[in-house]
Image (cartoon, rainbow, N blue to C red; front, side, top):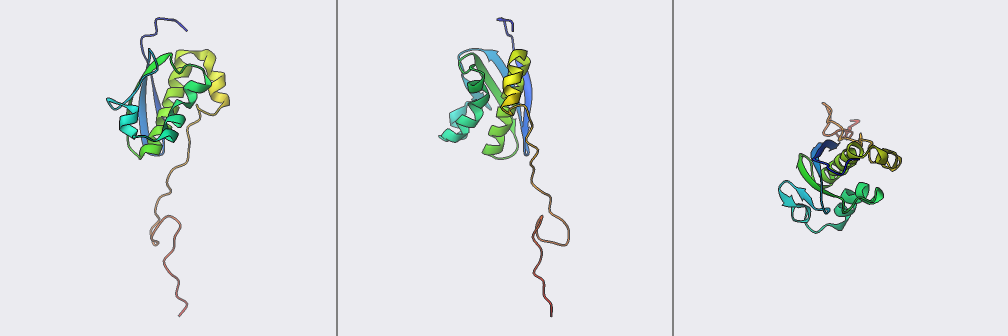
Length: 133
């Protein structure tokens, strides 16, 4: 990797959330939708742990500043999308980290989605009450 890293961009997705992640050389500051991450997501330590996992595993916590634009879904889905985007951006910035990221499952897009509602029933799986007589 070159030390004069301009900017690396990657897209991460989870459920209905999409995150555009921009990686720049810096001190480890994370900005989400033009706000500090803790102001955007509130004081939820689990979300911070999930978001910073790829950085922690690759020992790059204080190496990059991260700017994120995220849309759609709820906070947990958005954090999952951010984690996926950070991992992809790290792999793009430094191909040597790809093995570590892949081994920990950060480059795999989580395929689980909400199942669609079917006609003739009130939900995806739930059925209307059956009456024999």
